[in-house]
Length: 50
Image 1 (cartoon, rainbow, N blue to C red):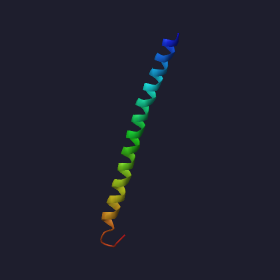
Image 2: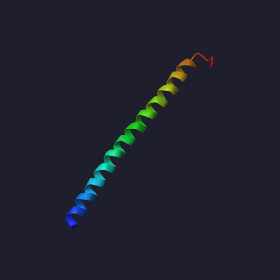
Image 3: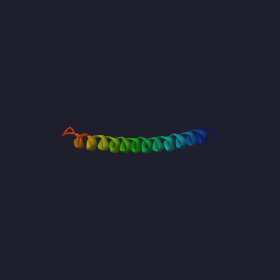
């Protein structure tokens, strides 16, 4: 019984870690897109005509 409980907890932990990695990767992509938009706007405004 103790072994089954440990295997179940290990499985849940593994799933949580994999889900967390995907979440962090998605957040990184969102931040990258936001940064790109800011950079594009800064380039548009570089001549002082915003």
